[in-house]
Length: 624
Image 1: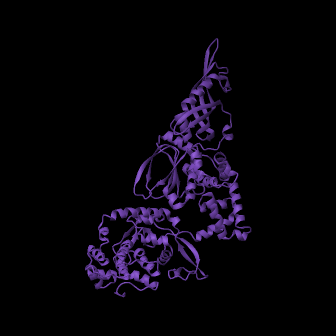
Image 2: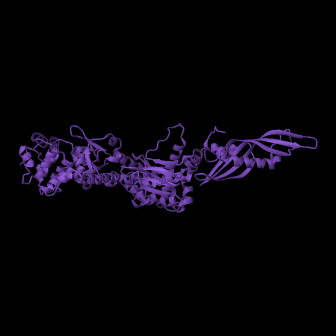
Image 3: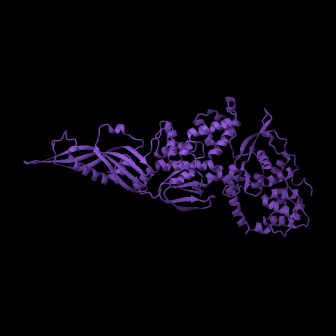
């Protein structure tokens, strides 16, 4: 013992061997005439004794929740004894026995019962291979996926097979004795959507903002949902993740339990990765890859059962009067159907589109093709960025509140972990930010809109062939996780800045010129340096240093803020002290974008931006 072909064989030898030996020895002792004695020298044994027992193979493997059943075909060395009036003879024979076992296994072997022992029937291995591998991984063919989902639902939610409904996957998980925990991050790079804990133990979790991590004790059967899955994705992704982990528990917990028993591991988890990778054709699969494929394939089939899903699609086709091929090829109509199905089943629209194609609605490819052209993007050109900033109040709030800055064609979290200033004053993304754009920068969607007579429309993006144009759209709900991180970082910055000089300088008793003068002094800035950065002449420098009792103009404050690269909050404070305020005019939006959106840019670059939209430049050309 010690060289095992698979984990079930190891489990039998290390955990089940002793009770199997005892039962086999008792059977042989009680039934010596049931043995095959055709090749034995002794035909009428008085007694028989088991000398050695070794496992040949296992078959007929079955799993029902925590019960593992299997047939162990064993090779038995048996000593026969024949006693007569004249002498006592003995002989050894080899006999194969089939030992049927039933084991209850949780995170340990609860009990083992030998249900039957009989001589091995030749050819039995071929006829009773079973539906599980010798490593306790179920065999599920692609053509059997729908049936597998139906078997699951018959047990846990039979009504979903009778009528279209949103499958209550969280309630199903609870009915299976599982606990769902949300609100923490499973990794620091958001690569895992969820995981299920097959045994009790400790798991390391990160807080939502990756500022700290802690070790949390969890019980067997705990499902952990990554906070990013909820905030950045949607409820549909959460439900799919729960269904994914529920199926792992339903089909794979025996695999994990045996690993736990054999390897003495305190904690075993099966994770739902954001990007599952499967072997190429003709390449071998690992156990983990096979289990992930099964859970990924079954989750949407459980949430959208085949027969009733088709009924619901037909119902919506009737609602939107999709009757012929022309209607079905209309991406806008199919988009409405997909959106309504996603809402009804509480799944993602992408999952709906895939499911529709799986069950035969191939026309939905029109939506997929449409979306591939209009997929979201993180990089955004300056002209397009200003258009979205000008037309979207929420993006303006995020930028004006200092939650995000515009750097290297991205709206990125305003934090040193994600953005830094180079020696020449430019803002650039950190290496970490470049590797995690999906978690630290805002995403945008391309949309087609009619040509708009608006000064901020990025004309360079217009289509030449028709009367429409392609522009970026900012959708807050698709950026919830990133926004949540930015707001928490801002809260922490606010607490810190209350203790800094910048906070004390903003004393409401000061005049605008006094605050501007103190900022200049704090930076140790000379008059030539000030004039070069702001484009303002020495008169403005002296007014600030001397704390003039006049009010600077809005243009002067904007030039000062741009030249000294102040954040938008400080600029607004100076405006307030001068009894000014930015309004919703196109010019003032351009000014605010110059300050908050073009951080790190020189006064010349910001003036080029203003002049491209027909606005006067800042600095020496402006009125005093």
